[in-house]
Length: 515
Image (cartoon, rainbow, N blue to C red; front, side, top):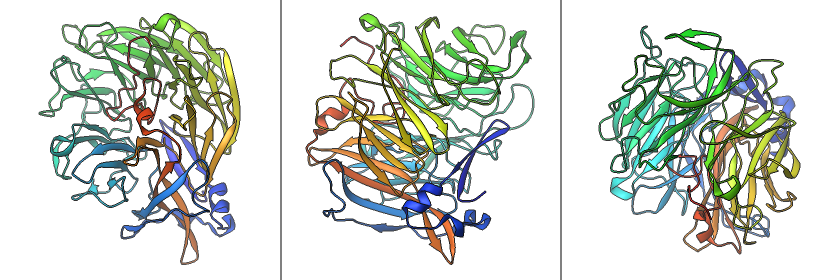
């Protein structure tokens, strides 16, 4: 395949052709060959860009750019997150397919001392999660990719880049074998408000819930999901108990495990914070589940999106099983897994939904990207309580990652859409495209942060095509932009969704109180 980053899902594959990227970068796709995916190591290099008339329009100003990593193994589905690791201020943290975990200061793109952290060549496709700040900052990351699902695990990393512990998950409850982690590690309070726990679905059959202080499974875990999981779990105190429950998508294959029957498809599950504790079988402990006849690889969004501020859970499905009725659907369920509404869109809903105040009226609505093809995506804005369409906008480029939102200075959230041919920014109220950035391939989500100058910052982490010795190769690139006239204080508004799974802990949860 030419100029492609592939993401294998189960036994199938998703291949995104970056022809549009190569053209916009001024490189003819005709020169790309199978050898373009070769792994030529390059030294990290940085270009600090001074904004100019060409780089600073009425929406985004390019502040700096850094390229580097390993040619042919760039940043792909790992989304950039944010953490303050030293006195240099907030840093963007992201993984790549060469097994590097980057940490760059958002102020100028300089490396945080001790970084990048290297996994020994094992892919990092998950999004890092972060707790603490400065000397107490800790980074948690799932290591592993679908091409080699037995490699990898769960890592905890000190702010200095020192690895504190590694856990290699079992792939099966009774058989030998290990499994990597492609979904991201969510942080929450499963044992109670005074503890911090790390929840990690794996590409095997098990889910792990680890005490962050030790890396040991907390009581009731591991837990048997009975199939691989690519959905990042949301963690939320759904019932006011002071403990977070696990809300996670799942794949499913027909069969029986521990006297429980499964069908071909998937499910959205709500799991008790105690997991299988007190249960006879290790796949018990669910509050409820909503089964579908299609895999659920979308990472769920949780928040007060329903009428009267009640909690809703939104998720999409995948495309693994052909000709299934749940394909291309987005579902909204309540906290007991009962359907509130569901809606079929015009493309794959494997992307993760966002809850945001796109109308500026203090309520949350739902935004999701539906990938129609490798070169086209529809972005849908839907009413939270009933799923009615607010607007639908077609954009060029396939969306593999997920949308996020930012207030551009208008008093409401607009939508940032990452595609394989660049970034599209849509007005939250109308869906109109107000800005585009081309020449960068994105298979993840953008990062929205507050900048020291008081404006909103947008960070993109992806890849560009470069002509090296007569061949097109893909190289990692991170770019940081500012939004003139914006207010950085809005980044943490209750109605915002500024990064993948909303916050650096990857809880996937908007504040569970009414506006």
